[in-house]
Image 1 (cartoon, rainbow, N blue to C red):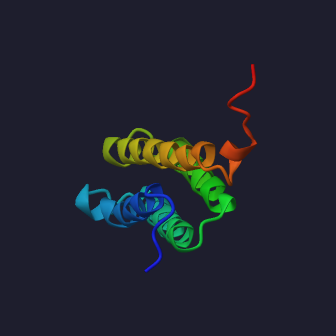
Image 2 (cartoon, rainbow, N blue to C red; image 1 turned 60 degrees about the vertical axis):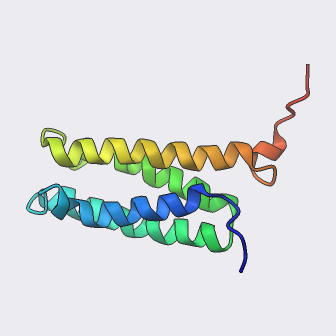
Length: 121
């Protein structure tokens, strides 16, 4: 079996699954925009992160970062920023996704990290 290149990608798969089930776990399934945004973002994140787990590519990490940014601003864009559970969930999970994606990008020598000269004075 092929070894996973980045442990962060399976973690993002789990975060995608969390986003899919979180409206029902946290009780905001009746907040339509929040529920559908969270579920759709979770499906997209899960698919991209699973792809990154199986066949790692830099564009998948960038896509995860973009999904994290969308998730972070979605409460204000879609008008559910005043509803605590979906707003806090979106902001906290987006921060975790973004940190994990950026971590891979800056540490993998085949991605962004490979273009940074760490020995320059």
